[in-house]
Image (cartoon, each protein chain N blue to C red):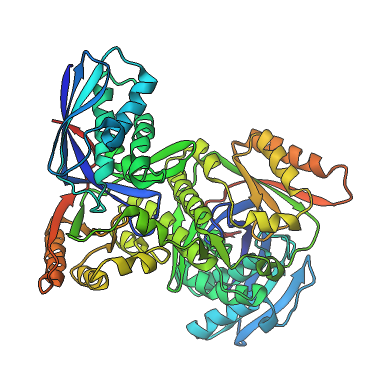
Length: 306
Length: 306
């Protein structure tokens, strides 16, 4: 294989209770990438459409992760990368992750799959690190593994694939305002009350149990974030209203996606997801804020070859 | 049925990563209780063997929990309770819980099971509250439900029954020193670093996943407590050595049981559990500290009718 075309999906990190560790994969929004072998060694980005991003490989997350991989693999060829971005940078649904993981996924395929998914996540983290100034994998893992993932630890890197209940859908609302991941990180508390941390780890444990038992009621009762949301929700206009209207419309939970400004809701079934989407749109209908919304089944495959 | 005899087992709370929420049930150590209907209404404790505990129902945890139940049930009879205690009070393996849950379990049987297990836990919590000055269910739930449990929330009370991998054994070492639960609670930090809390909730999530997938390696990698153990381990002489020797002997993890002084280790298989027990004993062999050790399969039934 000399060339590959892939779909690298958007992802939701944190997932309410699981700050920095939980994530899941979307299906209806993502970037396309074409990667092909070249005689000349190294990584070249030859095309970027959709958004204005650097072509220099060392300054582009897809380039940095690809360079990390080839530094290890030392292949007898190089690669050129075309990026067709649909996920807006800074949207909070894993735009940089989709680029960082897409390039290494594609190159791994072209090389005959020498690396497993955890190793690919490790290379992709090198790209993410440049984008967010911190080492994390909670958007990368769901893109590469699909479904719900839990980043058990970064060092050593260990990713758990959690089961996905079959009627689970996500709704995303992306108000078009800018929040920098680094700013959202800076406003986090250094310390949290022990009593809140206990509630949070009870919720993480029960959320994992709920996924294993396809218990939608328990998913709903577990999707609480009392540690991070109180700080970050101020960054998102109308957050509380979006949340309360989503819940009224039947959401299993509604919280900030990654560091925002996107929010996600989970839904039991597609029909209900569409109602939630309408409820979210309605909150912003009398404001000046533009927005995008998406309804998606949870993508259990992750990145796909087209 | 006019009379019932039960075995009310010892339990391990906290389970390393799951402070205040996780617990599991033991099989080889526990109290016996006999409860019988009486014409006279109310609760009477007529026999206590093993340890010196109050006979007055309002001052005995088994009495207090039983009173909470009959206040709700309003039966046309009373109950007398005989308590044959094997679990030493203050040992850290749920001595008061075994009494508090045993009496309500037995009375519920004699009344024809009007209450479910969560309701029984609620009544038993009223007894526990007297013993530990705080409302918690992490020892009660595994005794009443059996196996591993997660107390998702106290208010409303919600308990999750987690699966138990079939070759899982526990080893308990109980150095005969006294630690008061209230003192052990008082030394806890009010706040914890966010980065530590994140590691802890990743571990709770991965431990629950490990139980669901019978993944013994992941059980081992999840049984870490970086939040509470650093404070409480000072209360237990030779804690670090017990832990390191248990791990060398093949333990899947070793941590403080409840608020101590008992410690527990988990083991894949009985043979290995016996090796761990020996290793634990050896640590104390050159000290003046008396100790008891127990090896037990995880008890998936909980309280049993004899």
